[in-house]
Length: 128
Image (cartoon, rainbow, N blue to C red):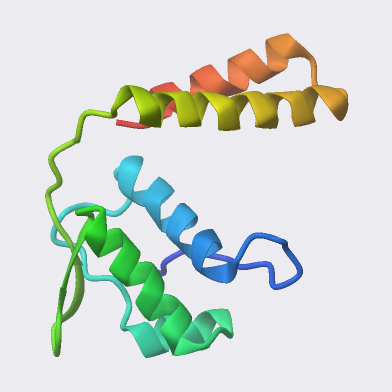
């Protein structure tokens, strides 16, 4: 198994579980982690990231609930083929609100609108 590139920032205001879930979801959506790929055992990834094993276990449970991985006792976590769900209007409205907040934060930090648009397009097109 290739090394899994996940990093956490204990000083961040974002909870460690969310940092891990978000990074793994990006790898899943982009196709870096393909169906049939075994994820590292909970305790090994916890040791690698210097976090409690329950943090990794919770991250794996969240991804399993989203349909990304299959968890089996004794077999570990395995990436599975996932049917893309249809987002509800409410979901889309929530994503739009979060994007607006992020874009406003970027603009407040001096990132030009054109650069933001280009980055968003590149990210969206890079995901399968």
